[in-house]
Length: 207
Ligand code: HEM
Image (tube, rainbow, N blue to C red):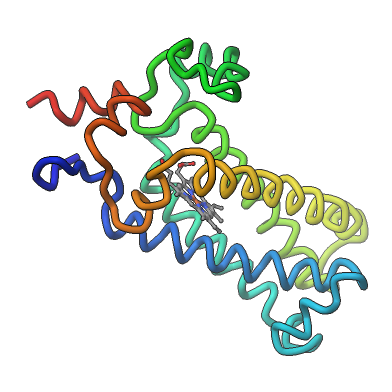
């Protein structure tokens, strides 16, 4: 990771940010159009997105675009998201994070253990959404057992994914200051990096 001159440290590169925000847009589209198809109560979201026929045709395409973008995100970050022994300890003590006692937790690398868990939750639910979505898209080609499984798996994976993203947005917009700026503009202050991601800070400022 290169520095962009004091007092800024590059946290996310332009390609990382572009992929993240395109993934977010496609997620919101696939999520809104999906809920319109899922429940009559949410039918008003179909009106927002061009009507029932449009939503029915475009929801799976939005889902495929989301899955492809998430695959790019996976390629960028999967290696950095592996949990180490500090992360496992962090997870055991994560209640301390919730009460702002970060000093009681093991130091984090570029991503903390909570962020890593979000990444794996989104990656695995995206695989389930993609596979079950393909079954629901072409039902005539699928055996009955697979169709029944897909009807169950698709909304369950969507709820898991949506739950994770609600927490993600809450944490990154409201709880961790400067986090949103890092994803919008790419940089953080050294003091922020040292207090939130101490191992990563040492790694990138070592030379
Ligand atoms: C829709 C609104 C979203 C907002 C406002 C948002 C915001 C952010 C921010 C501010 C960060 C940087 C956190 C840091 O400084 O370390 C981030 C990172 C990340 N985002 Fe999002 N995001 C959104 C949607 C999504 C979606 C839909 C996904 C995937 C399905 C996603 C996956 C990730 C991942 C894997 C990271 C890196 C790990 C982490 O920081 O949690 N985000 N996001």
